[in-house]
Length: 335
Image (cartoon, rainbow, N blue to C red):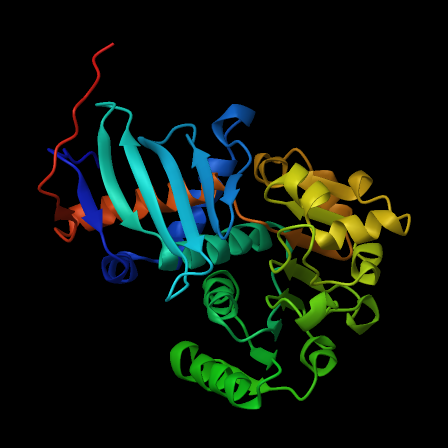
């Protein structure tokens, strides 16, 4: 459905929460990554930094979409109330004008989990039903819900260092998803019997939180917690044991995450078994997926995901009359 936009609008986090549906987001991402890859459409993130201030930018122009744009996030670490705020700016291909601003903090959690679920839907056996989770924060919570949208989960077992938080996580799964859930006393207990293992928590001191000998044969691993060289989440034994690695941003995962850099340092040939999310969705690696006995999806996040989900949310917000018109106009430079 094409909706006319007279001027820029704002979509709040509350509106995004109201209109968001996991199934729609997952299918939108699968469709976007099923199109032929255009490397220039989703370049690597950039980071500007001076003193205690940094700004990260993730641009993308998804092929086939109406909108293109970028997500920006920034932080001044020495500010009185340090925190990160996220905004997505969308431009309209039909008019070449700024169409919308979206509060992107919640949206980032939505897109990360939906992307993992989109990949998991293609690499996890249909009977995979037991989910083991390390982490109890927002990302872990969203991933459990996203996975529940594509697989009929039978049980969720969670570990995080804080007993109260992991119990609250389990209680929320029972309440919100109607799925049996329990808190585990150790990370090994949480994952040892799981069909799907989610690592969604960086460790204290960057010591890995997941080890290969904890995984049962045939388990599928999803790792989202290491996104820069200084961060660690999974041990090199996990990278050694998995036989297929699907990456949302192939070069960034292999060359800029602490987990994969550590694996390369000990002699593991990660490049030989790693493929892009686009290759997964287009069917280019169907043979490798069919042969895999222990696949992994590893994510650092990318602008393509942000813009695809932002477009979906904007369309739904406009259709529901929930996007807020802004009393501003931009001066256009006519070329």
